[in-house]
Image (cartoon, rainbow, N blue to C red; front, side, top):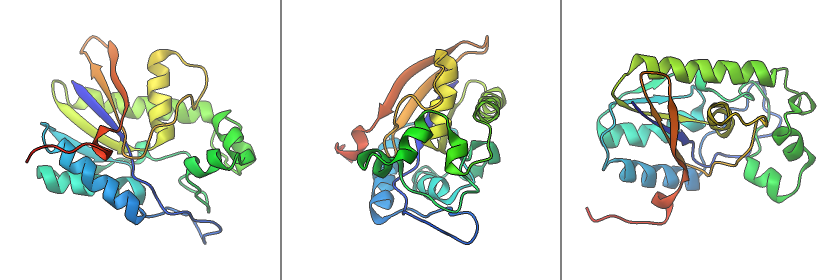
Length: 201
């Protein structure tokens, strides 16, 4: 089966929320999602899934509308910081060299106020994605989720020790070919051509 792992569009910055931050997409993030939907409208996708967080299913919604697919929400695809009261896009943390960026990529999540165990979370992500693969043999599935989720799943395939080892762009697509015998091949990583290219209608 063919698996498309899609990172959500650019979300709003939220700090000090009363409860989980769970930001919505910015106008730019909404625009990115529409470009993504137009791009994927040229492909066959059999099933569309999303994390339960708003930034992910707001990104998935235009794809579903374009392809006539319902969006299935899956808890195990949500990011490790789903319960945090703040959300700052990783691009901003990196650009400003915020100490939280280095804590994030180095797996020191407790310094960010997280109680999530990185290894346990990586296991949950892998098991969730592998369960999806088992459900849909021979089909093409698109999953809209998060940078950490994509890092952890692909990193497990590549035997990368670091939890966050690359930075998926907003609405980027990474593709995996999954065979019935358990073999996994990364076909592409971090595709963002849809953000700059146009196609004839």
